[in-house]
Image 1: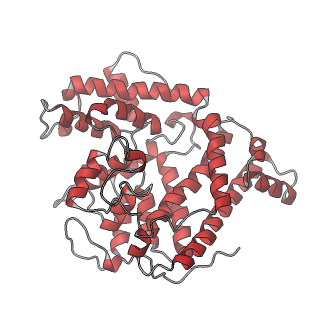
Image 2: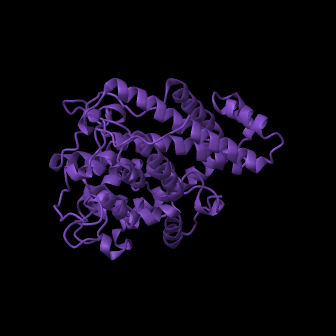
Length: 401
């Protein structure tokens, strides 16, 4: 299948008609509003820190494993490819991809679980909500405002990365149905309505499905590199098994490294082409006239076909016990959770051990404000800085190996 580019679609987001920024700024003479968002994210401190944050393997396990930064760059490349093929705004798709993981704490989902437990009395911790805090408050680079002052469309894409957060009347839905909306999102939305009940625009939907494609491909690659499973173990999976057979037919006797790369390359291509074909069918049937038509469609219009959606679930089901819950990985992540909990407990008891700038304006007697400030500080740490801080404050620190 040839993936030729569409002309700009009627339902693409138009940077010239953006809903704007929270703090009005003069337009750029050389960049669109969405291009400026991308550039601001790339130059953000939080973006640079992704280079030393865990994806699955901690920083010292090997130079070739993915980090949050390399994962983000892979998501961004796939998002741009999809946006180009669907006639969408590539800069907005890129911005949604570049920023989607800025709120992740050190040690990946283990760090998030630990902070969620530490903040249980104050609404918990959610990395999407933390991403919003990073881009609206915690980045302090500009003289006239905190945060990056991103456009409404980019903020919407970051917050609604996984779809609507509430129903039409504002009742929390999906993963938030039981415990409610994260406070950062609820509070921000009171002053800037992100329409949490609707799906995001098509560019944000592209960023979200690019995340799935990148996860499937690079986690297979990293799992093979770590020798947690063998390539032929994937042979029973729909689509992946077919790609294995096709590769072996086309390149018999290929050396293991090239064989793995070719299979992963073909998997990415197969999934991208599937999203393009399925989304073109859905979009032609729905015939949206505008970006808002996409938001109000009631379902995602950028998606896998049923067959590839099932393959995506099968890949994740394969990786879960063999990689994410592998005894070796689980032991390291359990220890990493302990590092985060120890740091939080120490700073909660002795907040003065945080850098002075993190104490500015903080009422130490206000339990929730103190806990949130500590969580912001820890969430911004890289893996290695968290380990250095733990070693400084405690007599014994796990090696996470």
